[in-house]
Length: 169
Image (cartoon, rainbow, N blue to C red):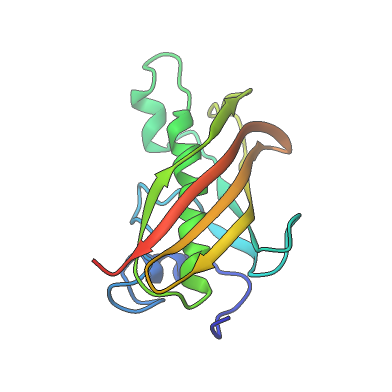
């Protein structure tokens, strides 16, 4: 593992979005408003249910978030794809945190279940990513993980087999 902390505040996440945390050309989070978390509370390369690594992060929900005005007017709901993107963001972040080189790209997801909604009255999302595979070879750097998103402690999204790769190009 690289010599990075095991938790990150918002400023550190913004440094990652600017390409300053893992270095130029390496894993990078998107900038706001597409940054889908406010802090990472836990990260490892050997924790989680499978001992292959994990990430736990939080996103504060406020009624003035950008997506509530446009999805859907008069019936504000956070798009489920943004929750999935947050899980992909964290999967790629974990690969960069390991010190692995390259820019992150989502490759796919096995199954997605949406069983709840994020409305403006929710207070916090918690993302939990659990790696089932993390590998680095001469030709491939990739993580495969399952994830859940909780809204105020209630599981609302579940995904299996998220795939993120790092590429030098």
